[in-house]
Amino acid sequence: MGSSELLIVLDRDGGTPLQQQVCDQVTALVRSGQLRAGDPLPASRELAQQLAVSRTVITRAYELLRAHGILTARRGSGTRIAGLAGSAAPPRAGVRAPGTAPPALAPQPPRATDGGDALWQPWEPPPTHHPGTALDFRHGTPALADFPVARWRQSLHDAYGRADVAALGYGPAEGSLTLRREIAALVRQSRALSASPDHIMVTGGATQALDILVRMLVEPGDVVVIEDPSHTVLRQVFGCSEAVVVPVPVDEEGLRVADIDACVQAQGHDPGRVKLVYVTPSHQFPTGFIMSEGRRRRLLEWAYAHEATVLEDDYHNEFTFSEARLPALAAERHRDTVVYVGSFSKTLFPALRIGYAVLPPHLVRPFLGVKWITDRLTPTVAQEALADFISTGAYARHIGRMTRLYRQRRRRLLEALYEHFGAEVRISGEAAGLHVLVTLIGARGVPEDEIARLAAARGVRIYPASGYFVQDPPTEPTFLMGYAALPVPRITEGVALLAAAVREATGRR
Image 1 (tube, one colour):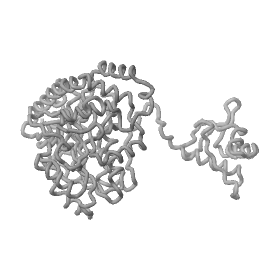
Image 2 (image 1 turned 90 degrees about the vertical axis):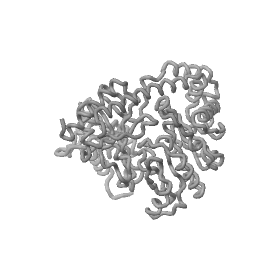
Image 3 (image 1 turned 180 degrees about the horizontal axis):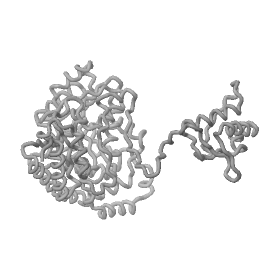
Image 4 (image 1 turned 60 degrees about the vertical axis):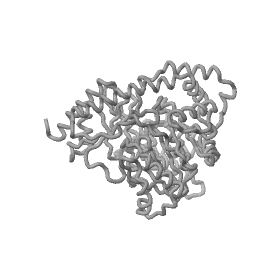
């Protein structure tokens, strides 16, 4: 702590002498670890001016502290903390012993009551900034090593070359019109969703769109319905509101719409208070199930009858590997009940932080109002670069290459899993997206964490799935296995090592 950071507040109307107050507060700072052995204190004249007291008050306080062994004064080095005899001050935040690894950062519940709530389960693996030699089956990570950086750099260069005063200033909160037009063309071609650019809002990733919609539509005591299982991030976003979050099970056809009323009532709430229903119909997270046409119709009918908004998160919108491809839910005749949310995090790269929401007309102005307040605008030049990347065909070429690459890697993962586990593995979600859900039937009774630990000892990272389930977690060890970022030979090697770890966990050789 530098001398200018010493915080002391004096009570000039109290009965305690000022020098004693200074002595007591410095002692408290040492005991709390805010001041540590060797930290400098301000010179007596400097601190006296800071506290607006006579220098005599500070010199007497320092004398008391030296008498207690808290301060030491040496010619040429000033007045410093000597430490408290017999007590070790706790380390300050952000300070760690030499040679020790930095602590992992983890989110905290937004409200005190969320700590014990089953909905609040920060289950996401930490981001892998330096993958090293590990065989990491982390989900949600695209093949970043295969991104055409040189072509993207050209789009950035061109965008900055065209940038005028307006482009470098505060752009529109709804986003660049050029980019919104390109997004409108993309969702029309790939998702059969016809949307006016005026109804498309550019956001800082899909998560910001979710956050804004919650702020707009949900009041204290309202109900938000989510899929069970579901992504922890969205549970955290909804958990920041004062709403009641109700999980509703999914099956092979998607969200069990017929169960919504019963699930809401089981928690003592009125289904009429449901304001949002969150779904991932094109590739349910994490199961990978695709919502059937019949279930889609029933969901839209239910939402219209209850005056609720359906929030469609199309997080893997470009990558589908089955012959049959259903359009976006928002492409249906939904009578302004569906908000469609997408992003470029998986198709391009997560650090781009550009997402978008396609809104019914009545939600455009309220959405813009919140967007304006929360961050004013998504970086304009990056939007123009993305619009250039799309309009010149570079985006379509990249998606084509990635689709072929992901098909190859997905096929190798499935083949390897069946080669090593045969009938003792169950896989879902292989029709779309960048991960599959793998259930090890033959390892029933073995904790997921034990298998993950044994796999990690062999250099393989896999991620347990139970934390994504609010109710009825899997009875067999189940894992999310992403394959997009791993070359085919590494997938083959990784599954072989995983099989060895499972054999060790089950006692088989």
